[in-house]
Amino acid sequence: MAAYPRVFRLRQHLPRPQVAGIPAAVDAALDAAGLTAHVRPGQEVAVTAGSRGIANMAEILTAAVTYLKRLGAHPFLVPAMGSHGGATAAGQRRILESYGITEAHCGCPIRASMETVVVCQAAEGFPVHFDRQAYEADHVLVCGRIKPHTRFVGDIESGLMKMMLIGLGKHAGALVYHQAIQDCSFGQIVRSVAREVLQRCHIVAGLAILENAYDETARIVGVVPEEFEERERELLRQARVWMPRLPFDQADVLLLDEIGKDVSGAGLDTNVVGRKYLDHAPREDEFPKIKYLVVRGLTRVSHGNATGIGLAEFCRSQVLREMDVHVTRTNCLTGSHATAATIPLDYETDREILDVVLSVIGLRAADAARLMWIQNTLRVGEVECAEAYWDEARQRTDLEIRTPPRPLPLGPDGQLPDLATWC
Image 1 (tube, rainbow, N blue to C red):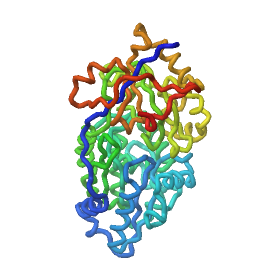
Image 2 (cartoon, one colour):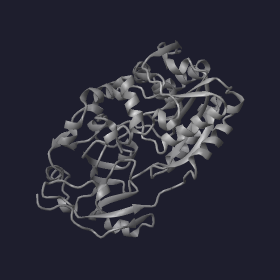
Image 3 (spheres, rainbow, N blue to C red):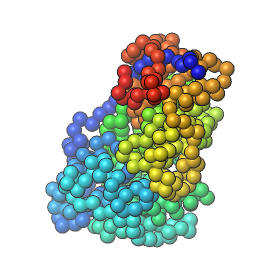
């Protein structure tokens, strides 16, 4: 196929609140959560560290550890990430280290274990698991990002409540909770288990993190245990307003330079690409509506976890060579989303993919295709867009055109460059 759409780069003007100073914001949040009234000198405090690539997470955790040390406490970090890292303690420690979350940087031990304590039976009849290291501490500080979940829908989705289940439940808990969600609902199970954990597992406070559409820390909030549910509902509403989004709500093709667990629990944020309810098509009332997703690579710190690859229709063959099949399947099966690990059509080069995908978009000519190209679903501040969007882009005040239309930069090897290195 000789004809490809020409592309131009645009910059989106999206909401961009930012935390000015991480340590001061963490101190203020923990003061507001009342830690000085509960944490005593000499007490051990487990601080959760998750598997997502949360902006400034190493700095946030370091600030929390420093705060606890000022109170005379002995903080330590607990990897709180369900089945990520191949469901092994060593794998989960490596995940944290790849984010810069190390004992040396944060100034405290990391106690990684897959061992859990069954603290009770939930009302629905299944065991409630909790990380043993955290359970044996005097207090647990739950740190996590509040955002819309990639599969579940409700007034509570991904955040502190989920961290107490899937994260601190480790592999054993994540497995049973996802099974229970299939028979009940996410909302019922998250509330049922979280209430038991709050009652039985020494939760001293929550440190809730919100991000803006540019993958930056927008707000840090301290939450007292008895207000987890109420505050998380409120913070989720705010997170929806600030989350990333694509500039147009219709596309024939979306090129993604990378997917990975550091980008999203689903590898790619289904809220951004319109695949929250169905793997390969948007629901009738869901936007954006994108016909075909193309995955070009995996993030380095995903360590071969290609969770979410099954939501794409096409990928480069190199992605499958980099994929750790065992880790990917373990993660997807634990989350009761087996199809997220299935294999798309793969080709060695971007040129081959484009030739195929542009031949199946319908009656629209290939050079008139509605194509968007992003680095990943966290980074959509600047987007390469096909010339089909040119007229609309010129009329919108929330979009800034950065370049004129120019040919797709396919090299002699048939590959596109990484978006971050081409302009």
